[in-house]
Length: 199
Image (cartoon, rainbow, N blue to C red; front, side, top):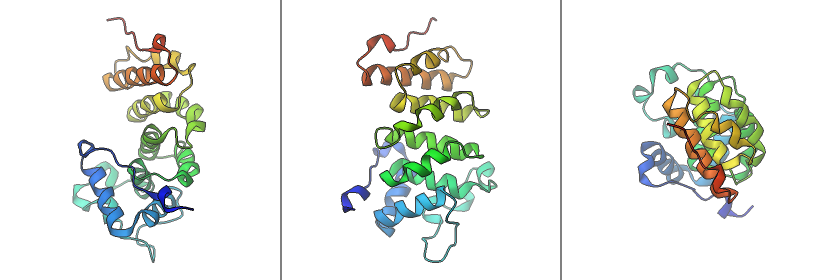
């Protein structure tokens, strides 16, 4: 496969330290190797410290900077693999991301939604139905990430589910639904799909 498929797809500096960490990791180990490792981490086929793999600190950062809740999460390696794919995509990661959307860990589900939001048109459109089901996830952060992702992979019919979230008491979820509706309107050239909350 041509090297161009492993090129970094990074957002601007405003995305912060996470993107900078992935950029540095690409420079350190190479794009092909990093993407392969991220997919194996996400799919559970690699663990931190496996022989021949990079140091997990490249994508985790120093242990004392981790969210304490995440630091104790045994699913952290899978979440880190997904986090790399938010900023450094490869089409061969699609199956692992689709599986990650139903992971038992909320952090993994949420991060896979972020991957879908960032790369929805790159082999992740089949995720739409699974992502829509996550609008009723038990974790509020997963619900918000799912709403955001639906802007990229949702169908026109998804708009009704998102409209129902515009007045949700969770302002982050309501805002994500509004953004997603605006993106659906743009993708389908349907201005009528834009968010119209009744304040």
